[in-house]
Length: 433
Image 1 (cartoon, helix red, strand yellow):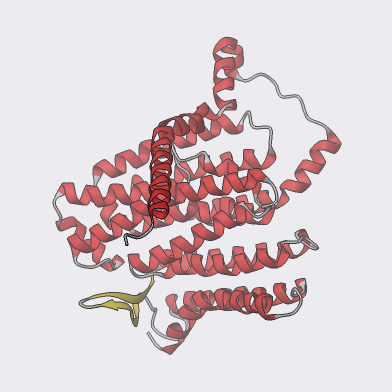
Image 2 (cartoon, rainbow, N blue to C red):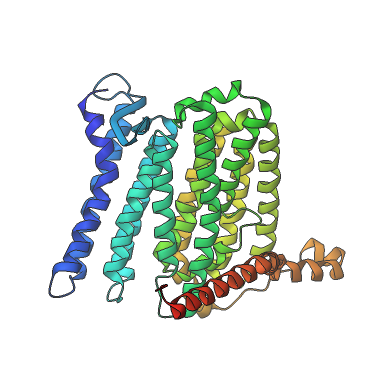
């Protein structure tokens, strides 16, 4: 494919994290805290470089400067353990190029917005360090040619997301919300890790190009892999019953909410399903479950958003409704429609999240308009009141999940106490003479 794309693809991935490392070293080694200008300019240089590299990849994919470039781009071996090795392979196709450029552009826009929005905030430098870390994760997710590399970027996005939710760590609620989101991510990460190992065992490779071999697998094995991928996507994209972490994620600063939960991170699970479509395609069971979950999430979120009183929370559930529809589109096989819907929805939500503070200000100044009764209120006021109450409490999903996991947590605490007592007894007895 030529030297051009071999340089552009690694640069798109590495540039943001390299800028992050520069700022981090300045924080660790300098006598005084680095200035906002230094942190902003350094990280933005990395983000803009990544965006330009993504543009270069797009041009090569379209055939500018030579024959159109597509397929796998090899960079050797990332990790080797005896006979097992993880290939350092990136992938150029319409999905990877679209997501790479779209994520890079949105990250640059949010970075520019954040300079003004977070000016003189105590965590300004920390925000931009995390932004560089997140940008590298998204590029790795977009361009990875194997599930192992994809998982590395997936983890980087999850870690950055949890840290952004707990950005205002001096308050209790953001920290609790961060832990809740991180716990949900760990559940979906476990599904992706098991799916990766299972794919390697059944197909002999975890490259995305090898997933076409899923058509030759027995129906049960193909469905198992597809269901594991679907489980991972449901957790990452906040589909039912894992939707509770998304409104809690609004505890983070507005720029991170816009980038993560309106534009990029919330769509990561959908991108995973687009990438593993050859496996999903051969499993009617997984696709049927995906359609049902997506439509149920869309209906649930649409009901909640109509009664939500918080601007960012309402936007979160409006986002959730569209993500549910995109999930249903993917599982129905409408891949091109889903990709277009994903990009357009992300651009719309980014603008809405960034404008949310002004909208709140205008609403307080102008007052609230009176809304006429809905058809349900006119037809059955009693049923409307019940639906309103259920939507207002979000069907108490969080309470039910907490109740389901309470015995597990109690058992874990019991084991922890028993282990602590055993260690204390051993330490009191001392070593045998």
